[in-house]
Image (cartoon, rainbow, N blue to C red; front, side, top):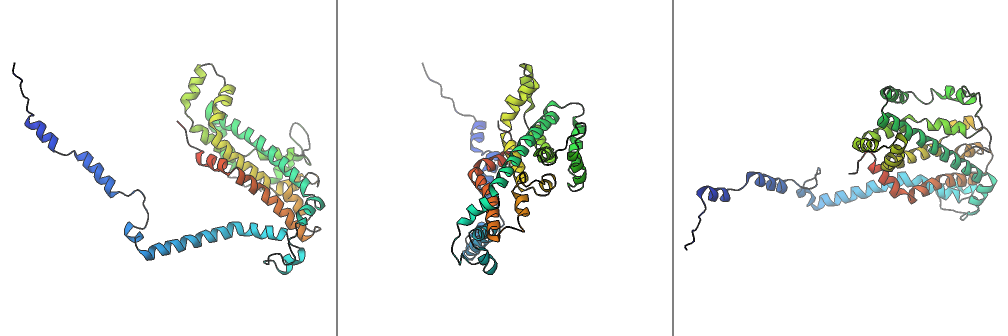
Length: 325
């Protein structure tokens, strides 16, 4: 029994020898296109003069940014631990009369920084709770439930962003002074700050845009399985909304912490005023060193909280608007 040898045909030989044009183009593209693109070419970067210039420019830029951002805070910390005479005579000298650590405790007791701080925490916490309640439920209703009038509501919320806050200040104050239908005066209560802060159109639109990016197939599958609107919101939407919750929480807390004009109008009682209003009220009577110490306490606490939770905040800000598969 003889074995037959099969020789490749001419077409097969030609096909094997000819290179694939698509693979050649891909290989050429990988060679010619660099991974990083910039205004400087690789040849420019090899120049010693260019490298030295870039290094000097980078250090100068970083130094300017650090000076602009951290300079006022460092000076405030220095002034908080100095005497009033040193602050006025030598504002940029490093403690000519020594470090005055007792300024912090005296400011806490003598000008009631502790009470103002607690009021600020209560205002920020209430503004965050009611603000998130309105933003999440409003965004859920407009984006996920989608009633027939959803576009009208969305347009109305968007239109309020074009109205300056100072224009509606008088109307808002009259509303708080005499609540419609309820006939209740909310002045000198935290409700006068919480409720207006909750009606934040920007947060509602921000959450709505994030909910628009969520996969609608998940909601349809949940409805087929018999889940109601509240179950979809609590068990599906909220766990998927951690990035936008982190971003809106940060914006709401910072906004409530630094608010000055509205608490000054609706909280005339010193026992209810936050740090921003309380420090302004004692400016004319308190010692300058104690006032600086109080300002330093009011500033360093939110900065400390941000440094502790900066990973969560930055991660939430980076993931806002993104969808995880």
